Length: 135
Image 1: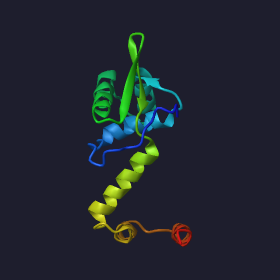
Image 2: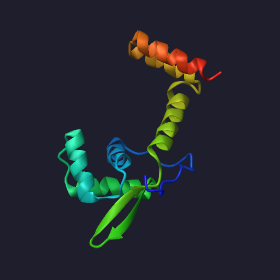
Image 3: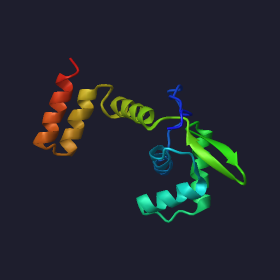
């Protein structure tokens, strides 16, 4: 990244919608700031969308308003860069999942997940190794 990102300070920061997350993922994957044209092109290519500039502009504006992105004028266009890292956002979302779907307990969430998706032996072994490494 370019050193401009910041950690989420406000736990009650408004959540991103699914579409806004796609926009953010494209931005997080880039090592450079991007224009709306670059963002739109990458989203359409990566996610098989047919979004117009105005659609992406709406999602970008919302992410800026919510404090996840900043924009800087470059001539007649704006460049967008993240104020929140993907890692920090992901961690916050995991905490929310544990609170909402695991009744505040990670074990409940993992058990629920394991009930809905059959884990392979390799996945189970990997989880065991990670848990053992936490001691």
